[in-house]
Length: 135
Image (cartoon, rainbow, N blue to C red; front, side, top):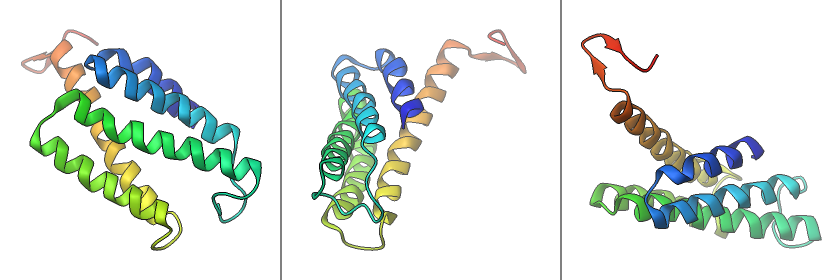
């Protein structure tokens, strides 16, 4: 979570302004998730640690899910966020196997983040034939 948070904070300035804020908040919230690991079974609200973990995780989910929409605002991105956000909301309600919908939602958003980074890399370092000038 700490490496992910650092990656978000370092990558955020490449995005459009509103998305910079949401991805930075997501990265900072992931530090909170790491700082307050939940107890076995991750019951949510209860102990101070579980409560803090749940609050930071919720902030991370919301800010991370907002990032693609704030950056791109295209129908495909909105559908992706609706899918990921729905999975995270289902997870937050406790429906389904423990962690399944959390992983579906976060992996979907992670895939968007990686795809965006790859597109940035390709636009900065376009290959000329089979040679890339950025290597």
